[in-house]
Length: 121
Image (tube, rainbow, N blue to C red; front, side, top):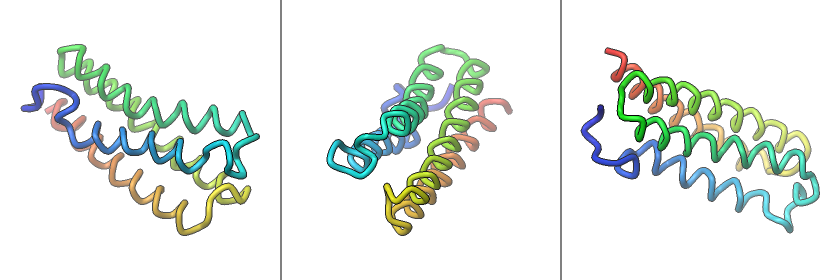
């Protein structure tokens, strides 16, 4: 297990928590995406998956389980990153904002992968 005492101690979980807040803020009811329920549901669920899989994996208590949940979390990072291309293409997010979110997601995915690799060593 990592040196963290709880999943809340992990910077990747903290960053994923901010991601969820950002996604809800970026695509609130008054945004252009506000009526695209399929889009909203997909990006929100994927963002929450990033955060919740980190937490669930940590709580499982074994490095193997945690590494598997981190793999799932990293995949969800990719999904949210992809959704920001859709948001940009549909005019739901400005290019600069979408690029900023995608860069943060790349950093988060790299951190998740680094921890996953450490756990498997």
